Length: 213
Image (cartoon, rainbow, N blue to C red):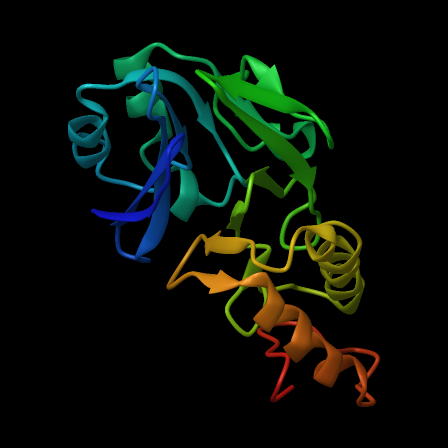
């Protein structure tokens, strides 16, 4: 577990869990100790241990690939809090989530407001969560490129999600993805300019990097 962000109002902890080294995040309101969990990859006991001393309010899901929800049922059972996911990914769960997220929705806990960004491409219901200068991005954007896509249509969709929603955030926004290290939006925008200046195969998809694809 690592504290990756901390200011006067919010603390963000990152836990890298399971065989795919998936990042789950715990966001804590510093004035009320209310918390939310973003993704439940695996090892529910480690997530529960880190939640001690906080008041869990929600489990938010960026998307429903198994490496992001492996511990979800156990965590939901132990915490008894609502699960929130976009409806286009909700069908992949083994239960009916309490909250269906829409683009632009606000999830509040303590003094913190998270804005939901629907960012399809990696999955139809992929979502990111934004507050202040922080973005929890799931598998939509990583350092150096977008999340993996399975078709050229999905790739065009994820690029549109990134450019029309994420790139509108402040350039100093810190991005915390579903795997690996964080990045800063200004860097990703600059690398995308390089990518978009070059011709590409119309069938481009898969694991794409802004600077080398």
